[in-house]
Length: 120
Image (cartoon, rainbow, N blue to C red; front, top):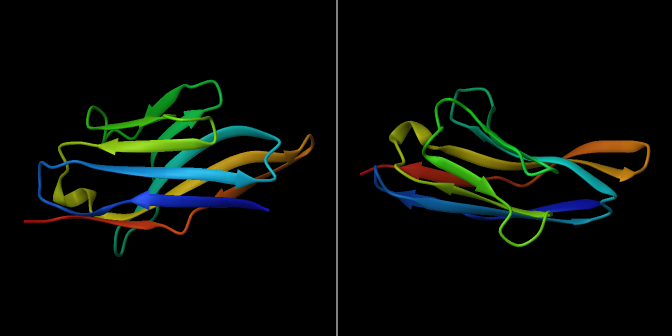
């Protein structure tokens, strides 16, 4: 079993900042990548940011220059620093882990989601 525990999120005014964290634990043999997705009401879930096991990051065009994903404590823990937030960033944010639980078996694992609301 693999568990993802998210923290952070909340309500912030436009232009403000928030930080999300995600800690993975359990039967993890090796990590391929950790990702943050978001889903706004009535919209499809979209990939926001990715960090690979090698430390490479990639971001959606809509958040480039504003969001930063990093591994502050260990490779099984990631954070998403969100600056200059806009109302259109409002969504439920999900942590996703793609990892091998054994040398030949990999899977996608999801956190429970955390709400981010950007509003006056």
